[in-house]
Image 1 (cartoon, rainbow, N blue to C red):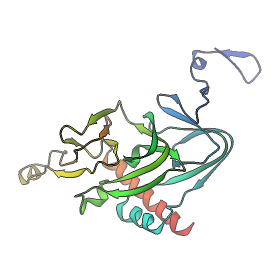
Image 2: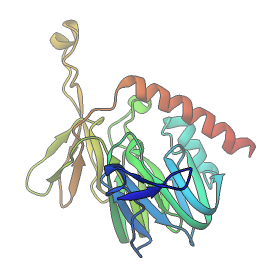
Image 3: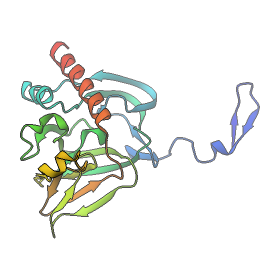
Image 4: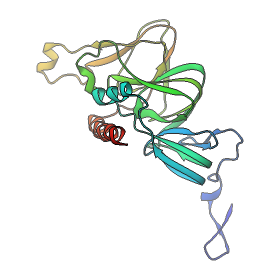
Length: 247
């Protein structure tokens, strides 16, 4: 394919063969395996830092928590749901960590998510922070999730090829740092497999798992978020909570 160069002549390169903006009338359309394009009109809520490009008259504004209860959850749990409201006319592209992008179309239903995998969702949807049953004092270790409900589209980014497991036949145990999303009506519990012998030997690195059992599914990525990434996430969460207080 040819493309116009700065000086007018056409430039020839295989770069232009399948990298042009997607031509799709749908509001949410995958640009490629790692990016999604959203056509604006109705607003979109997106995780801060996930916008890669846009065209048109587009505005980005910090999105408040919406209620003191939700703000309190953000502060106590360190769950960083740092959102921006994207509005205007045009189209916006979202991506994160070169992960594989998937969209989920909710029809008056819900999905529970690891916020680190969340990209963006229709502003008509509602969201909240929930504690995993049995998390107890482990609140700061990511044992909370974000639930999005209503009618609209949610985009997620999965690091590596995802695995989807049915939880209806038998319990499914998942590393919390690999869990991407699951049916919102599933109520995972915490399994702590650490014992004294293992602790004295430095641990196995697999001490805590989410356990899912019941009608529904869980999406698992081929990657574990690291503690360094978690610490960075907590720092962003504290800043986001401060903005909510003073904005």
